[in-house]
Image (cartoon, rainbow, N blue to C red):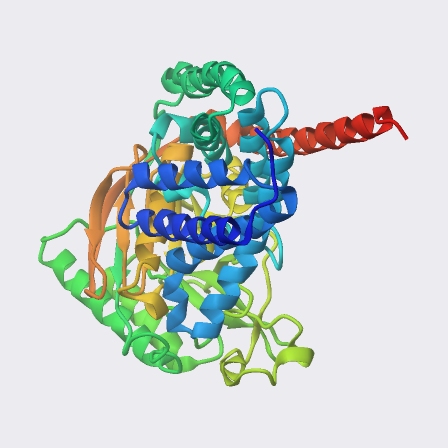
Amino acid sequence: MDQRPLHSRAAAAYSLAAFCLGVLGGWSCVPRHYTGLVLLAFAAFLALIIQVRPGFALWIGLLFGLGWFGVLISWMSVVGTDAWVGLALVCAIPIGLVGWVINQVSRLPLAPVWMASAWVGQEWIRDRFPLGGFPWGGLSFATAGQPHYLFSFGGPLYVSFAFALACSALAIIIASDAFHVRNSFIALALIGITFLIPISTLTKTAVVPSATATIAIVQGGVPGVGLDFLGRARTVTQNHARETAVLATDIKAGRVAKPNLVVWPENSTDLDPRTDPQTLQLIQSASAAVGVPILVGAVLETGQYGKVTNSAVLFTPGKVPAVIYTKQRPVPFGEYLPYRDQISGLSSRFQLIANDFQPGSTVGELSINGLRLGVVICFEVAHDDVMQATVRGGAQALIVMTNNATYSQTDQPEQQFAITTARAIEFSRPVLTAATTGISAAINAQGEVVAVLPQTKPGYFVANITGNRQQTSASVAGPAIGLGLVVLGMLGLALTLIMRVQQRLREPA
């Protein structure tokens, strides 16, 4: 296939098509779950990429990314249109760059392999850069954890590779080039291997039960919607104390079993209970009422002006509160302001970020009734490295403490919940998620929701959780598989550049 320059009308048509395909793909993701449309839109985008010149491939990659993320993260408009457009652009830039790379490697033998690994490299980078990364919008998460066995075999990057490989082969067939079609048949065999080899690991990922604990999740709700709840920290704490009092009453009446642990979500208190006596009294009274420890999402002061932490604190009756975990990946422009001295005057909303959250450095671990629980906070559930470290650190079940109140009734809570469900499948671990306004749920090791509190409905549920001692291949080898795919993409680009140099050297002067 010749990669020719396009006339102005054709260039405009390609540009519009790329943007519209991005919109279609982003719209088809969670919570609509139209996986087939996601993959068709992606394959059609790749078909455009491989037919144009490299510079234009970068442009239509950027447009596809803008359409994709413009729809997928439209919930950012709650914060502001500028925040929405700005984040969409930041996420689209790597897709523009990978469009150029895919265009470069598309003339290599076994092109779908190189194209798919290049796409995985883009996802790997977005999980880390800039400012700690933003992993939303990967092909694996867009398809909501399907198929299960691929997730438990190689993790999210492997799933993205498998789908991108299939879409790349389809794109080449759509483009109808004899050279590519011939090679695509070999790629189809590789696709079969990519999807079939993980099946052999299914017998190795069965649950090997560990200890069992009864855990209650409290969803207290917040006042207002969007950003309106900010500054009403005590009300949020009172709401969760009220629902815990209802739980205590039901325990005494024999309507529910007494749990071993109660979990309140992230930001259930934004007033440090170690320095605010009223908040401390609220939590201690709630803990005494149920007679068991409460794990509370709390904002803690560090002793440095303007520096705080987002932490999980265990309040046990008769004991000093213990910090179990501090969030390792604070969200830029949400939990801290990068380059504060330089940009603080650019927007009045930056004044809402009065403090900078300091990151923790260790995994969250808590043992209840012999069950080892791993703790992560909010968006961390989407970061591969944080989740890998937590499970490999010995967690037999997982707790995700989150606060999605800002984005209540948008697509964001459902997107994050889909990622949480995928993590249960990936690690074959039960997951409990506690959210201020929802979605709070208990998910078993097979990714099935066994208890749920819908959005904006205060309440609680009690679930019996049995941990899993068996490691999946994704938890053992997932990081190596992902890095290997990234290196493969880099190798493909290097081969292309070497072949270009050799071709130029052979050309007559």
